[in-house]
Amino acid sequence: MEYGLIGEKLNHSFSEPIHKLLGGYDYELKCLLPQELPSFFEKRDFKGLNITIPYKKTVIEYCKNLSPEAQRIGSVNTITVEADGSLTGHNTDYAGFLYMAGRAGISFEGKKVLILGTGGTSLTAAAAAQDSGAREIVTTSRKGEVNYENIYQHNDSNIIINTTPVGMYPKNGERLIDIKKFSNCSGIIDVIYNPLKTSLLLEAEMLRIPYTNGLPMLVAQAKYANDLFLGAQTSEDRIEPVLKQMLRSMMNITFVGMPGSGKTTVGRLTAQLLGRKFIDTDELIEQQTEMTIEEIFEALGEDNFRSIESGIVAQACRELGAVIATGGGSILNPKNTQAIRQNSFVVHLERELDSLDTVGRPLSAGQDSLGALWQQRHMIYQSICDYKPEDDIPIEIAQEVVRRFNENSCY
Image (cartoon, rainbow, N blue to C red; front, side, top):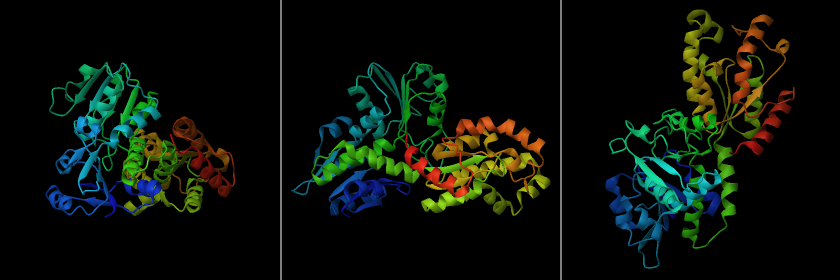
C-alpha cells in the first residue's frame, strides 16, 4: 500500500476519491481489527496513512514523534514515514475543522460550545474551539457528568457540535437532541457527511441556523494530509473544487410534483444524461407488493399504501448519486420530506392540471379531485424544492435540470 486509510469499518468512506483528486496517487482503504494493528505497523508497508474511528488515539503508541497539534489534542489522524523509517503522527483534522467552521460562517469567539461525544474528533473540536476564543466548552457523553438526560441544563449554548456517529448512514434520521430547546443557538456543526444533511442539520435548516456537515472538514484535512505525504505546501484554493465535485457526485436529484406531471419521464432522461442510477419509488412499491398502485389502494386503502410508501422513500433516499422520482402524495408525510431533503437537489415539476395524466392514479380521477390535491400539496412542493423548471418538453427540462444541478448543488 502506498497511501491509505485504516479504520475498523470503511465501507462508506469517501477518502479514496478525494485523495485521488488531490494527489493522483494510489490510495487504499484497509479495514483492520484491533488485534491486527501491531503486525500492520511492524511491516510498515506504506508511505503515509490516514486514521479513522476507532484508532485515532490507539495509533499514538506506534508513533516515535507527534506534531504539536497531535500531542496537545491526544489524537492522530495522519501518519508520515520519516527518512529513518520512524513514524510521525499529525492531526490534520484540526485545520480541517477550522476550515469547515469558517466556511459556514460559524465563529467560536466568546461563545459557549456544546460538544456531543468524547472520541478523537471531540478532542479536536474542543481544541479548535478553545483556540478560536470560545468562552466555555461543555462535552457530553452518554454516561458522563453532562449526559443526554441533563443536557438541557446547558440550553444557553451558542454552538452545538456533533462528533458522534448518531444519525450516520444507515441509521439516517436518528439524533440526540432537540435544537429548538437551545434558544441561543447560532451555529450547528455535524461531522457526519453521509447523509449530507442529518436530522440535526435539517432542523437547523428549518430554524435558519447556520450549519455545516463534515464533508468540508474531510476534504480540507485530506488536502493538509496530502501536503504532508508529498512534502509540499499547496494552496487552500484546491479544497473547494474537490469539495464541489464530491458534493455533486454524492447528491441525488429528486423529482416531486403532482401525479402525472412527468417525474418518471424526466427523471429517466436526467439519469441518462448524467449516467446515473434511476429510482422510481412507485415502481419499487409495485415490485415489493406485486400489485399495481391502483390495486393497493383498492385492497389495502390509502393509509396502508402511505405506510408502504414511507418505507420505500426512506430506502430510496438513503442512496447517494441517484436520480429519484417520488409519488405525488409522498410529500404529505413529514418523514418523507426529511428523507428527500437529506441527500437531494429537489426539483418540482409543475404542469397545468388539465394536462396531467390521471390513468391508473386512484386519487387523481377528475378535475375536482386534482384541484383538491393541488390545494393540499402545492405549498409543500414549493417549500422543499431547490428548482422548478419552466420548460414543457421533457428532454429540455432534463437538460436544464442537469445545468442547474451542476451550478447549484453545493451549499
